[in-house]
Image (cartoon, rainbow, N blue to C red; front, side, top):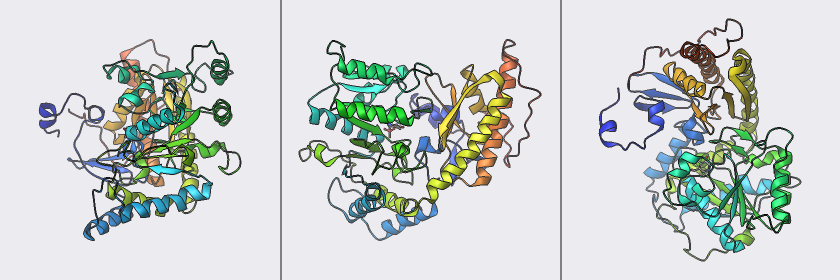
Length: 456
Ligand SMILES: *Cc1c(COP(=O)(O)O)cnc(C)c1O
């Protein structure tokens, strides 16, 4: 049931609830439950904010223990014991083992706060205004972050001109065989190119909202060389694909060992799964030489949300003192990859690309609307899964990293069945679409059956 209060009082701006029209009441691990007791496997994971699942017991216990001890909750940017423990743990568990020498800034609780701080700092350090971003990039909804975000619909919401950003083609944007960085390098070298020398380049190494586009290791290394050569700062926005989403803690670690060959960004943003428990929390980290802020130059009331620091510390303790999570993510990624390959093969020309890394993977559909039809069919059968890409053409698999094999298999079974159902509906809508490969009819193994029509 959906209480009428939402329609009556909540703004039309609400979005995800339209794709998943029910009222959720409980969640645990990789499953959600609604007010009718129906269970859903969660392949959306709070858009990547719930990599350790919903309500992980060890995080909840840390939180409750802290609250019961009378621990301080709100502290602006005062020194607190909880913040000291978080910083010590981040240093010991994440930064030191990777040889990363970084200062840590608390920019405010959301991802877009971290991006704004990164952009401000890059401009202050270099004295330049222009920032290069990439096609299909997504960096948040505030004006600075929107100016380096690709999506036209989101940009239009700004209501003012979005200035001082310049979008260049991401890896693969111009098709195979074109190294899009040739263009960037030409622009930088040509004094008549019309490109104002940028303060920074900002990118996601795997574009998440933009359609699960994976930049190659060679491309990333070359981008680092080019930015270094031209004195342009490199900002890696690891808000969605950091904290282990692609396997290692940082998404750029696949370019090599940070100590020997990996690209090292000048500025890194983290948020989403950083608190581990789904609580708002973000950091902007940068090389110590870049720390030119004067006290209070950037501030914000909710930079000291100690509850998020407590759970973030507990999450780092639980998952990042060894490589178990990274290895498990790689193992599960193979299960997902194999199943998506099977679906793609069965779909014939309806799936035109399979891509992804770690536990962010996607299938690009043609026509684009097939992806939303798959998401709808999946929801009816007990799976929450979202779409991504410029035209929502990609079905995006984004489960909690800690999902157990049974839930993963259950979700993939529903996904496979949902592709078959959506393709059939598509064919019923439109006789011109190509036939499915053979008589594709997967069996639904999902424990929860949600076949009844879901009412809004
Ligand atoms: C979600 C996201 C943001 C914005 O984070 P919010 O908390 O929604 O402001 C920025 N960058 C990337 C890559 C994201 O995925």
